[in-house]
Image (cartoon, rainbow, N blue to C red; front, top):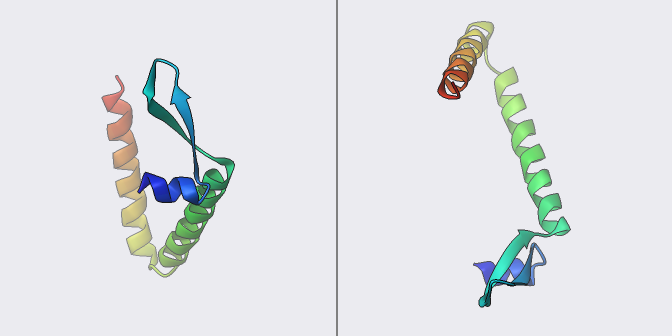
Length: 77
């Protein structure tokens, strides 16, 4: 899998200075661009789906999102 990402120019490999047998991997600019495009498409898809819901269903999701947000904040304390 990593070979394919490397060949596609989506990651960059550099030698690990602490262990020359290993490589350090980072996402390349092309990889970041691809990730941004995928996120934009997913966000647009979700927005379209949310728009198709009726007001009651959107209200339920708003309430659920608020509960999840509160749970996350309480977990940080």
